[in-house]
Image: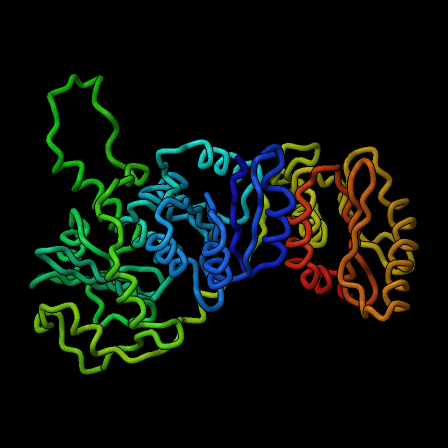
Length: 448
């Protein structure tokens, strides 16, 4: 039976790359795409989808909003979250804790393919399914997306509120407690509902630790509170680390009231800054709702909108990354060209003047880069001429596919162009993204 995977991203290059490459070797997988959260929900309403792969930041409905809607409407659908945010504070295992699966951009398409295969093979749930979205997922999601938001956690007996500022937990309140005491109390809630409200500013700053430190301390506290059987010294496991943050079902699946609550705060009217007259922590009201009631609508922080930075991991091909000594000997242009040759399968990257002279290059041993420059000049000129004659405007990028692999051209300023030569089955999406990222940088470095 054919299984459907829906990719959601407002970046056309990412959609193109995943649609073209992700289901290679998986003949029973059909790829679908959507450029927004709203479009994704329209697809889901008409088609049964086994897995959704979505970006975090998108115009309109963002990845978290989409995630909550999927949880409410299609609880059996798996979800993988793509994030372009750096995760130096989040080891890979920590990002995978809870019921969500995160993968950081840029990623190796083979790694993504392996995750998808795992999801589709598992019928009784896995880390990527959102059946039972939990508190730790939303905390990490807000951290990764550098969100400014209020997360309301409600159980039958208690209610708490976590406030995020640019991804950091800066304030918490629960009953009469506030600050770190309230944070550690809230994350022990065993069931209840979640409501994540974007754009809410914290009334005060009562927590000054990083999110990584808070999660680590929470894991240690949980480890110490768990009864243990007597063990020999050699049988003892390691001290809890960030990798141990798979908390399981801390919070039960979102209930219908979550969807109702979210409708009170549409994307274009989110709660905003809280009045400057908010009292200090000692005098704050016990009810969490009052903090929201004092907010006024303001748009999401523009700092959350970030561009994909396709710094592709070093590939296992003939082009090895330069040693520190070699790096010092490389020109500024060569250091930029190395970003292309570090993509698996790319063996030559040249900057060529429009007159055919080679300006700089990095090429696999045995390849005549001077010759490539001279030959490519005529090909680039022909491609430009064809576009002009057909009334298609200026050339942005072009590719010629051959039996042994593609050759890609892209203009750099008005006096030069890039030539990228690769093996077949090379990840063309990463090449396109890297060209977009670096063309202006190369132009400046070469004084073109």
